[in-house]
Length: 136
Image 1 (tube, rainbow, N blue to C red):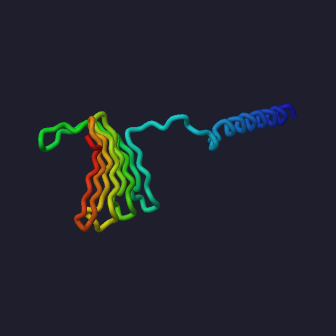
Image 2 (tube, rainbow, N blue to C red):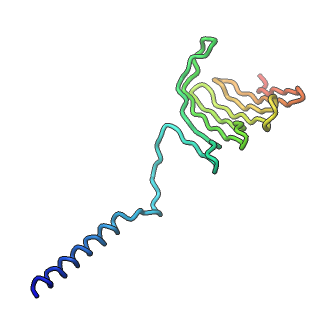
């Protein structure tokens, strides 16, 4: 008789411990992480294609010998894989480029602030081009 009471008490204690453990391990869905840290971020569509990305690009030497500085680059990409919006920032330059739809090669707009100068360049597929710079 004493052995069955002991087993019942022991089983009850084990169940209580199990319940407390499960409640503590339950994921807290409504909690928001205060900071998301990483070297890059990609947003993908249902097919797994990258549709948006933000990354820190390391400094690189160009073919002409110039060094391109470290740059933060945000890209928004169409369903055809074309980066249609690019926003970049570095110590030397900040700019945004908007390009035409897939199938175009010369339709774009570039807004740029480089060192102490700024400009807006508009170009279309028909060969029209406008460069706007502040008057000096």
